[in-house]
Length: 340
Image (cartoon, rainbow, N blue to C red; front, side, top):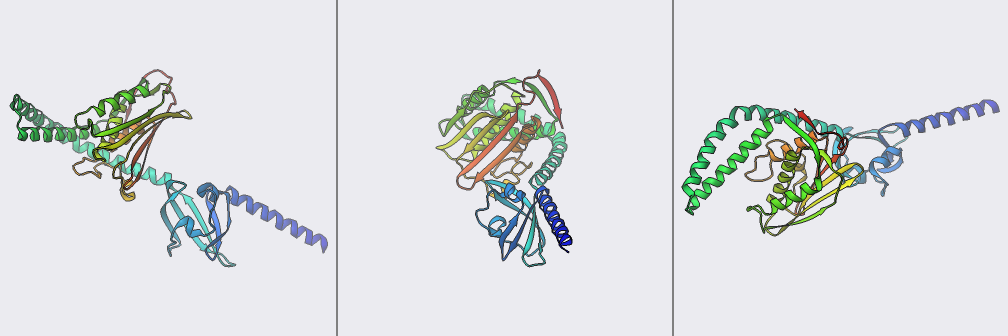
């Protein structure tokens, strides 16, 4: 009997070890609770949420729905994450929660949707943009001739609105064309300094915004200089339009782990969380009179460089755009590439 008992104990211990190893290796977070308090958690829970300051499951997941399965967007360790959750009862009482981080999946879905919208924009732009641009060019030239030697406020308004329409047409054309990138080794730190200097001396913003730069000298990186100037100009314009006179715009550039990181931050009105999810969608804008194509083109150009762009915003405090560009083959020969 003693030998049988020892064999059963060893078998039980072996099953427990296999069970524990399985829970540790599973790529999903699993935790069990009793009366809403966390009793056990596998390593993936700590990897996802960090140290558990509280043992209450609602402190991790917020208010729990009645449903067995749900998805929820949570702020975890300072980042917005999409979590897929399953809950079920345990035989001895309490509940088990199975949680999976599906942020990357939702980001890919959003990216595909944006690309589909951009394709629709392209079809529309190809049929309309050139037909609109020609009369606008004639109208702009005629107004400038009428304005020579005169200071007519009505002519200034007409010219301003014509220029705004031209910007809209150009945004359409940029969205319609395949993204062709011509790579070359670029002193990105010098480029950023130049673009910021030109922008802060632009008549629209001169003496109305304070520009603070923290630009480190970094190794040359392989990118399309014209396209990337367009990216930075759009981000600066976006920051200026989101702020009022006397506001501050910060521009920082640094190298981190084979990645060049560019940050453009403003202290403007900020963007509500529900709108933040759609900030790079074509035709979506938080600004009256905006086209909703500027940031969509920025996102497309950054992705064409195999980079990423991230936006963080707090309503009433400001917005920050962070671009990360991998060095990758930055030391290779210049090249051209067509994207989409």
